[in-house]
Length: 219
Image 1 (cartoon, rainbow, N blue to C red):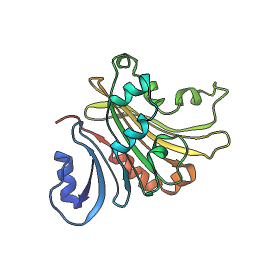
Image 2: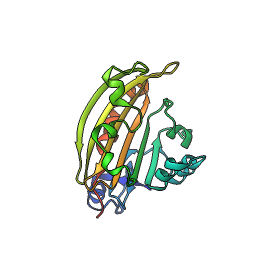
Image 3: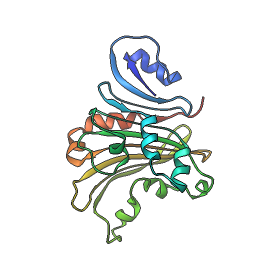
Image 4: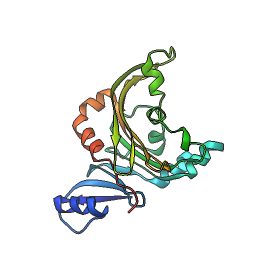
């Protein structure tokens, strides 16, 4: 779900109720999961890739645990300044040449609840802890740029920024926030990424998007 933000008064309304009142002058586009109290904002001209489209793409050929995890997804959505970004681009690790913001909220499976740690949260996309250790001889060129605890109203985890260059690939920078709810029922993963050249060029806009990510919990 996404809604537009209209001026400072509307921002206050979003913070209070994750909903908009009528105002004028669109400035930002808000992505909102009202059920779980999760939201973030992107520039108003960014284009969404819907939850339905992502679910459909991820479901193609999914079996076993992958299918169970997909069934546990509460919300996933992506945004990019390019209308050419597809669900396949969002769910692939190939580096996009334009910024791509992606949110995923899902329930933990019973066998995952006791296994969640800060390291497992860091490793949601790639094995960050293994690559950062320098002991993995198969690791690509890798740099850990930032790694800090992130504590929200009803969840906590880690905010990690890293850069890696796959063999025969281009350098990609990923800003990842991965959290687990305080009751250990839900995982929230928020990612903004693109090629490292693109990331540097759009750093201010990316930082604003990342800073807007908020988990307030069920109301």
